[in-house]
Image (cartoon, rainbow, N blue to C red; front, side):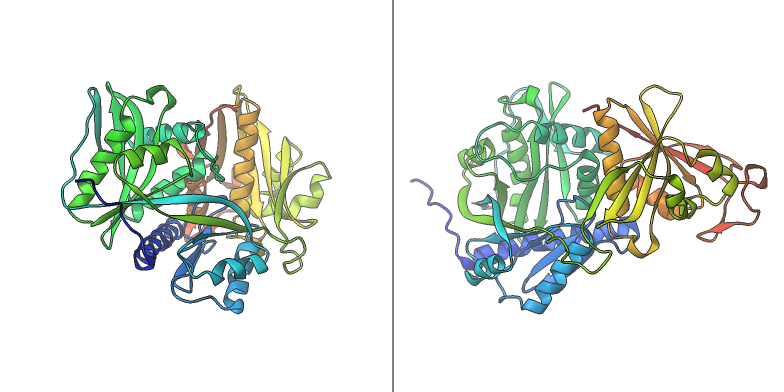
Length: 446
């Protein structure tokens, strides 16, 4: 007898969308905890959740809306202002089974349909067969394998299969890396696929309230059409079957990914509309317009107050303030942050010599936007490495740069002394300013 297609009513859609909202909230909370600042937010919105983690993050959205009433105008005003203060558009992902007045409400507020995505489901009966084609091994990532997992997934996402509707999302590698680390802190499990011993693909799984969410699956182009995705899917389903009664996956409409999961027995449950409200020019308070990042070609003296936020030694600052190139972050026409990019003696290697964000706009994603632009520029110029040095005592800076994809390279002891122009007894975060940590970010050209 043929299996009956899985039917999705409003109750099931509410459950699935609730799991999605819960995942976004947990991952964003992990991002905020890991970053140690209040730049992100998690706001409950009429049964759904509005989240912001960092500039360009896949967590920046409203999810699960429309299954517990309609949000009032004052709450939406607050949410939209929170995104606008961070220079980010508001992206609402709304199920077609949600309250139908939601779409009209958002459209009236200036949201526009940008894209859509399909949600498919499979009923789990407690047993799922693992399918393992010859030469392919799938298992949970081990310690030290995350970078390899991220490389293959990022490679897969960067080279879509070309079938179906193109994705509306594209994330820099360092943003994707941060998101996946935060997913892991939100109980998402990463799976790696090997083909003849080589890393060929990756995927992930989260189980909550009986719903198994299959996320982040991709195969490197060189290993496609070899059963890698089938093996990744079956391994995750087998692990989920013991604890969940339904598995769900989100795909681009008409994509090969959708075709693959439907062959495995998944049924199309519903479509999410992706509605986006751009930051209206001039809609924010003075000095809080959307952030733009541009090259600066004016006198450096105009930026001295920003430079001094990041440099305690007037002698040292005088020695390099005119060096290299400078990016500035602008809200309207007002400079609220800067990043100085200088050459080094090593070919293909540049250094962030000085970077600061004005105190009143810190923790709103401005620093992350400056660093993302610097990384992008180095890559476009075929650079291989970006360096930065910061005080070992400055825990906030160390955390920030590591979240941006930098890794510690070396420590220079007694770099901050009266001999080098720094006042004795200077304390940062309760620690005496003495040693300097150098970090680097390996960059793929282009």
